[in-house]
Image 1 (cartoon, rainbow, N blue to C red):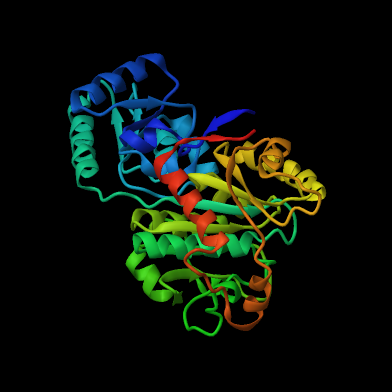
Image 2: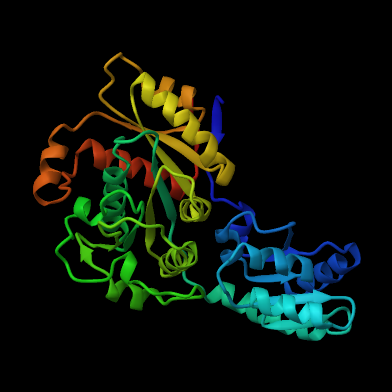
Length: 370
């Protein structure tokens, strides 16, 4: 792959905040298009949402009963302005589908065009009033010991220094706790085992107040006992941070779990951290194949040293992902982490690489991968 564009999953939906329409019947699609056009909102048709971010980012979601059941099976987070539509009067099956997906209204078209128009008018007003959403990034190691947790922490700290609000989420229950990397292990606040959520929406200010905070970064860490993370509250936490305007950084386990795939699917960009050696490239290529089946918006961050002289662009070529950033080795980092968490100098390789990745996801330029 010589060149690639890194942009948010869902493309125009994330940008335009249009209406996500999950409808199979062509006649019903026509009714929906007509009402959306009258409301001044674009309708984006799909079989199902390509990611949680697309689902959450739409101004409204219109779906039929079959789509409602599919979305319910994916445990998508509850959200406002979900309307189940049909061309016949709703029966038991339609009401069951509406309850399963959390739809607030069940409407029959074209008979209830006016009611749907009112819903979309409210959605249009909400789009204009909504504050910008925060970026979501996922970081994953190309192989064990690649330094993904360190880079995720550097991303969160750099984002906090530049934008003022960052949420660092530990999605690696076997990693020992990212609070040890941030240096917040002694700080009071909730960790994953303590956080009890049943899906749905959670207010970011309340979440932020309940979690530890260090170096301007709010952190939700795992503890030292392991155990899987429930993907439903994970999705709610990611959504809360993004909706609250924070840059959300997920440190993702190199293991195919529902939680890991929830974090990957939610991300605007996935950074695969790869040391510059042959074995790491081989391992990272396998990881990249899995990652891109979940979220194609991925690239590599290459970490030195390169014992065999392997160049960063060659690493990206082997892994078959765009090159996001490269950084030389920082041997002192390991010693610092043993004492008091990650310390960052303004001109350090970690900060430079983190800044490059944040700039890419913010500006969406074309990046080289050759």
